[in-house]
Image (cartoon, rainbow over all chains, first blue to last red; front, side, top):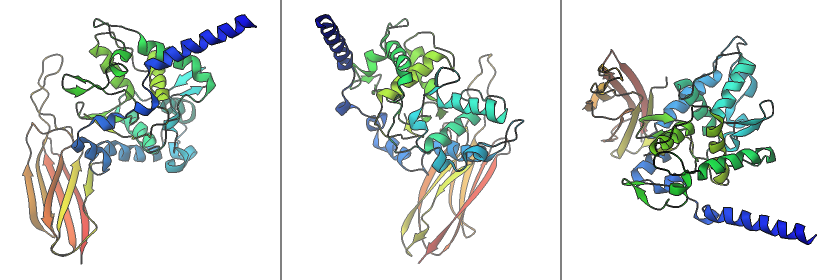
Length: 258
Length: 106
């Protein structure tokens, strides 16, 4: 009994130690709050926000029939403003058939393969970005709740481990910048806390909309490590960990970032 | 592809100064970049933007290669009468897009 209690205490202390390194809830900030007022204004007004061009295209694609099943997303899911509300705020989510988490892009492609009998859309292709943007837009303002499913726990843990793992020629972990130095600047730009609240984002540097995986891959290249391929389980686990870390923060998709 | 986002107030009082905002979907390829194999990517930009109100030109802009993708153009004008703004974008490779928005002036 005493041994068990000591064990439990040790586990508690370990858990507390792990949590202490993370950013406290009260200090969490969206990337939005690090931006200049004119970039914020761009995001706040849908007629200024270039991400809305993708959202509008996505709406058209949502209603267009595709694949040999000759079905559109709307034929099963109906009006996206109700059926897709809050969905993006829960992704990546656990997929029972695959036994692992899938992100929103993979979910769209699973739907295409299984329900529409259509070819998958490539990561960062215009069609996949427009559909993701359109679906994510339906969750704007809704609090992120990714990671509530207990089946996701081992995958969140893997994502957290990857986040804290030093790698690349610069030997940096995500945490070295985004937990330890988020209040500082890197080459004139705010480092930020890495909460993926607004994906897919219109990034001014890209002059285009892009997915969270694209963002992660450019960060990984930045620390001069070999980036994982699009759709790699490691990237999904990182996405999952980051989204679960941002739990409770409101969705901003499609966000604008510098 | 959705082409333009337009923001014009639906109503205004006569004499009011109103802001017109337009966002055009375009890659604005400057013509100076090269592919991995060294070939120049040909220029593909919007070269001209025009706004007419009830047929009269009220704003015009020429665009150049240093302008970012999805050009966002805004300007102010005075509301004189009810009518229709007509926007036109012209560019390389035969690019031509139009959009319009109406305003009621009381």
